[in-house]
Figure 1 (cartoon, one colour):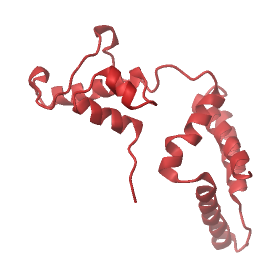
Figure 2 (cartoon, helix red, strand yellow):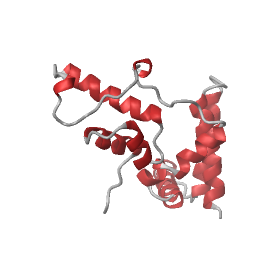
Figure 3 (cartoon, helix red, strand yellow):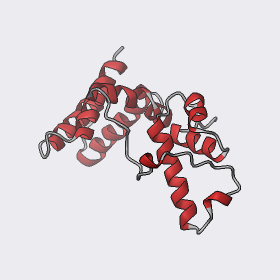
Length: 169
């Protein structure tokens, strides 16, 4: 089975090869300039922690980060235009590469949950992938009861509803 690299791993590898920010952005279309800066910053910090002289570092790592951009990494450069845009990026992006097709993954979860209900309560009820999407959306809704503005819960709820539509096609 072939393992695919995440965007962050690709960026890190290219930095270690001595590629410039522009070369990395060109080679990894999903990469943002902020992600490249974040990776460079993390590499620089690790080298400094080891007491290495960054200018003499032999791997070819270039630290072409403008001084104004030398700051600790942030999760994202800017929030997407909407929660729906972010959810779309998640369910069609690295998540699918990590967990496989949503239909297969959600059906596996449904099987585990169905087995738990049978073992725990002695009741056979076949949960479906659609049920998993609905229940996970309800979980996110319950968490939103604590903070209606928690973006991750909003994005995840939208994502599970989008997966529901996706697996029913």
